[in-house]
Amino acid sequence: MMRLYTLFIPVIVIITGCSSVTVPAVSEYTIYPHSQLNQPTEKSSSKILRLSTTKTIPSLESKHFTYLRSSGESGNYLYTRWSDTPSQLIERSLYHSISEKALFSAILSPTSSSNADVVLESDLHAFYHRFDTRQPSKGVIDITYRLIDTKSKLPFASKRFLITQDAPSEDALGGVKALTEATNNLTQQCTKWIEERTKE
Image (cartoon, rainbow, N blue to C red; front, side, top):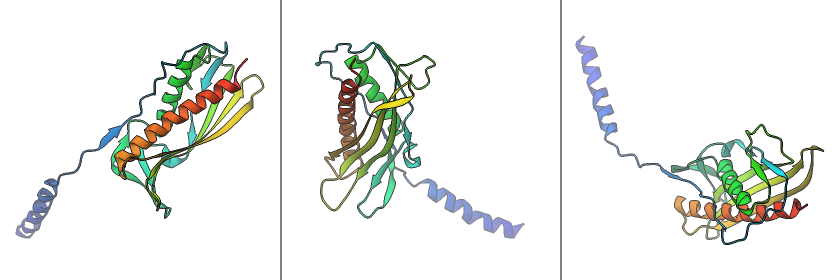
């Protein structure tokens, strides 16, 4: 019994010592849809649009905030994350932008059981804070959109968007600000493209 007792004491000391280490709090960020209420909204189509669930690579299916270095090294910031997955952040911003412009009589979510005339499919290839040998670092979004006619089941328009935005600082917060601005730019460009391709 005495031998077991003397072995047990150091373990308690080690555990107690480790528990006093202060771990930084995790900061969580979201991207609010960018309002364009100063622009006139005029319904340009009687069609119904459904936003399909965005397909993406495994590394972007979580709320982790990813960075990429020029050496090819990639990873996640330890104490910074998104409030939703990158796909959901973009989908919410785009939904708001299309709704505000009133391009369709209705916009359906991916889970809606109602019929739609047009489906917007998307593939997200990149959403990260990129560092290279040149300053500043950048927020990068690479995504492809397709407009599908639900009657023919065929795409009638497709476009790949590569959006880059300089980061104001070389840290996680700078990356957040860059990707927020890049998302706003993306939704504006994509909304304009959808409007041009779906005019009756």
